[in-house]
Image 1: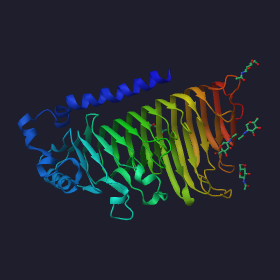
Image 2 (image 1 turned 90 degrees about the vertical axis):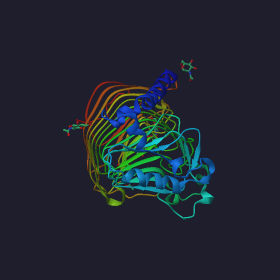
Image 3 (image 1 turned 45 degrees about the vertical axis):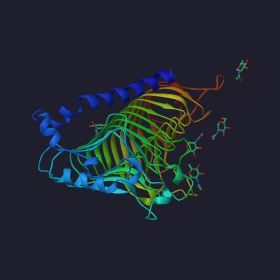
Image 4 (image 1 turned 180 degrees about the horizontal axis):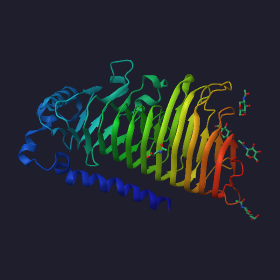
Length: 413
Ligand SMILES: *[C@@H]1O[C@H](CO)[C@@H](O)[C@H](O)[C@H]1NC(C)=O
Ligand SMILES: *[C@@H]1O[C@H](CO)[C@@H](O)[C@H](O)[C@H]1NC(C)=O
Ligand SMILES: *[C@@H]1O[C@H](CO)[C@@H](O)[C@H](O)[C@H]1NC(C)=O
Ligand SMILES: *[C@@H]1O[C@H](CO)[C@@H](O)[C@H](O)[C@H]1NC(C)=O
Ligand SMILES: *[C@@H]1O[C@H](CO)[C@@H](O)[C@H](O)[C@H]1NC(C)=O
């Protein structure tokens, strides 16, 4: 069952990707362009001096190709990273705004980061970064790999000096699809300050023990669609942080990893707001957490109107958790203010868990209760044949129906 579901998602990923490569050009360039117009607007990085031997630093060529495309006064400018080559690229920022109101960055070949020892700056926030580019399309055919060579970083402790592999900040109407991400230094993909994005057919992988290698990290963004992605990393598959609204996520295969998290919110007493999140049709295989909302004590704001539906768990730990006592590294005092969690719906959650108790764990603030929690059609059984699963609640209010396993007696009206 698990392999079937995973193969199914992999199939979605590959099918979607190959559709990207087949039907890409006409779909992306609109209906009013002939192939010759198209070729004139393509800026192949090898025409700007990129070598693609995996050793030569091709950053300057990438930068030149980007600038040429970004300055074109056409609406279908395109940078192409051709297949069959490996391009070594140092930390680089693709800056907008561009004159073209839609710009495509096509990744068919491989892009690799320099190993940690070759990074000249002591700390860098990102490796590949797009900033203030509206109407950006970053698309692959499912073949090109973006390899952060994170192995050389993971053993070096302090994650503040580790970069995000691919970052989009203030890019409205963004599309990202058909890429393979491997072994990021820290997060694989981060989306910050973007309004309107469709992210699909990504295949993101790093070892289960690689630190902080989130799949997709989202903050201060709205109107996002994320679907048909496979994520197996050492941290959250998707993390949704403050200032984010209207995100729909579907057909995700997650695991190993830490599941899909909303938060952590309210860090250092911050005011955070997250609302309108839907996660559906997804599978969590041997993840450390499944669907999680996590907030620090002492914060304010809200996490509300959140739906988790049609979720399958395969031997997940902590499959369903609201943790308002999030405090990973230090001892935290109990505080009276908290991010308010409300209108959270869990519907159609099935599968197995390895945790013997608190398979569903709603640990809400003592002072700010969770309200309007709805649990409907939940059957999560223990992987151990003789164990039953249990639910645990602190100050959680709402209703349960068709909650077979665990029984939801702890939820108050
Ligand atoms: C709840 O969120 C969904 C998106 O997941 C949105 O379509 C809907 O309008 C929101 N409802 C309310 C009452 O805010
Ligand atoms: C904080 O609150 C939690 C939840 O009620 C309780 O288990 C814990 O003992 C409290 N910690 C302190 C230090 O009071
Ligand atoms: C799990 O349940 C057992 C039996 O009910 C209990 O003794 C134990 O403390 C629970 N573990 C946790 C972490 O709450
Ligand atoms: C539920 O989650 C809270 C917060 O992470 C944790 O402290 C607690 O041990 C969990 N409860 C059980 C019974 O596992
Ligand atoms: C489960 O319970 C049955 C009946 O009590 C027992 O025969 C069996 O050994 C138990 N299995 C495990 C894995 O504990």
